[in-house]
Length: 353
Ligand SMILES: Cc1cc2nc3c(=O)[nH]c(=O)nc-3n(C[C@H](O)[C@H](O)[C@H](O)COP(=O)(O)O)c2cc1C
Image (cartoon, rainbow, N blue to C red; front, side, top):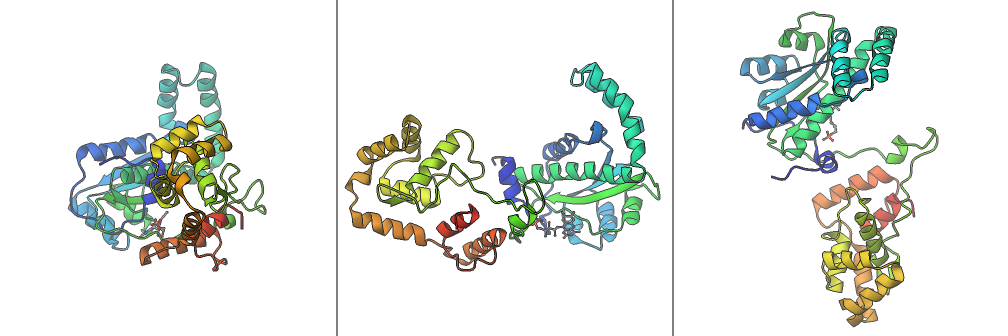
């Protein structure tokens, strides 16, 4: 299996509530441990105490402390992300020494940490607990995304009683130990649907809270824009140029959707199209190449009109795609119920309509 990219893992990850009993290979489990260990933390103090719950009696005890949630019983391992609130005092000398020894921190930086960190940490008072939990949440996110990238599933979990979890991991009523999160990991026995997200413009803003964020890509034209009488052609050229610069992350590209239909119409391969766009200094040159080297030259006005009509009217064709379309529309603007084609959805999400 190919490991997923970070963006693909983020897109694919869902909260998995049911797991197959198959074990996780030791090498894979250790990669997850490494992913947690590599997480950043405030001052690099790594305050976590992460417990891998694997035995049947411990799974049962942990599940009982988490409202009997079944995923803990079913998953071959549940990571308990605990922290030691005061651990920075014991961790500081080695953290500074290692970073200084390997040259990652210049002597000035190492001394600054030695001098400044204790005051910073002490001044946090009771908030130090919260600060260690922030660090642990980042480590948990590393594990969830690494697991996803390796074909495993996970479920972030808040539904538990802290004192009970502490007893299960052997922290009794130690006030120094705090619990951030539980994360069962295993081979998914289900493919949960994406429950959707709130509209971006409600949750993201620019500079100030009252200025909603709107994606308005300057280098991407609308799918409705035309060149040589064909919709989507200017946009596809834009996508190829962006991709060549590594600036088209996460997009489906050339092998699917409008791109695929247009390349099929032109009877040109993705590689040949990319090479032609790379060689063309501007749109005019690219279009000259398309007109003389592709099936474009044989297309009648009617052929082009039929293609355009088809592309601009494509909407979701089955229940699964309708649900996905609904999620994408709700993430953009749920009030725009008149939008029912992908071309309109693209224009809406890119701030053109
Ligand atoms: C901090 C946190 C705690 C959560 N706690 C639980 C939980 O105790 N049990 C559960 O089944 N799901 C839990 N979830 C999963 C959320 O319900 C889920 O992430 C959300 O519905 C979005 O679904 P998705 O993860 O598939 O995108 C939790 C998620 C987060 C981030």
